[in-house]
Amino acid sequence: MKQTLILLIGILVSTTTFSQNKATELYTSGNSNFKSGKFQEAISNYTELMEMVDEKTVRKTCFINRGLSYDRIKKYDLAISDFTEAIKLDITDMASFIDRGLSQMHAGNLEKAKEDFNYVVVKNNNNRMMEASLYWLARINYSQGKFEEVIKNCDRYFTINAKDPELYFIRGTANDMLRNFEQSIIDYSKAIEFKPNYVESIANRGTAKINLLTGNGNLQPSKKETKSACKDLKKAKELGDNAVDDLIYVYCDRKDKKKRN
Image (cartoon, rainbow, N blue to C red; front, side, top):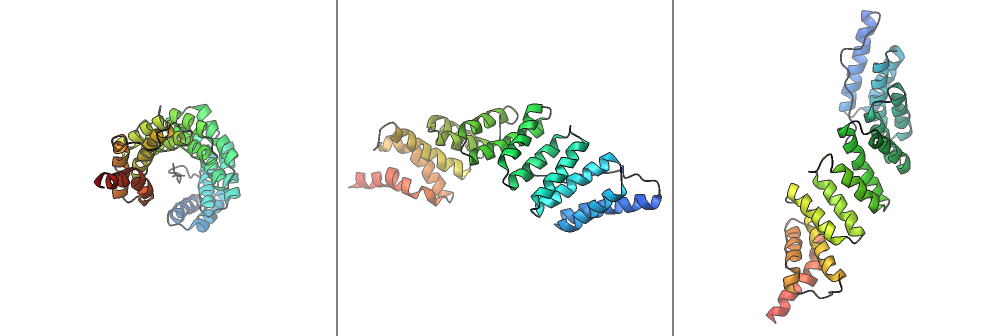
């Protein structure tokens, strides 16, 4: 899930027409500068607007959009501070927790990021926000080597969105790391079902099939046994994955050469 600029229409109210027009101009300029990648200019626009307007909804939106701008220029501490202010103004807005979690993650504060994402999951009042939080929890837990947690995150994610190939791939790799090769093969197959030429899943499924054979003590599986794995590995090769070359040589092509001899 990407952090998204908040659009605010029709509530820039002030006591004078001049100040109202100026507020609208600043807000429009801020959004335009953000979309154009002029983040420092956007920050100035939102800052000036907040100095003019006391209305809670406007200020919350400015904190969010300025926070997003700070995040883009890698001033993560300032982004986190702005998202925190937005949360103080509206603790019911789960998107602000996700935005702050992403900035925490970008800053390398993974445990704090997980706190924000877990808060959204515990609240469980918005499927879209839940989906985003579980996605990032799975990614962070994977980076920390917490593969059992990754699987739990993905399991819950699939109760919301059961058709996301990337999450099946992530759960498959977590199962690979835990040597649950039968389950990882199922996960990669689901990923391929929803994204037929998902080269990473095809390559990993072929590798998992080899690992399942050799992990059971069968160090020299027959050509018949490796047929399905080799089909995946060669398909991955056709799709541009050269990392499978060694496996193809050892378990596929070399057997063909022996047979010809």
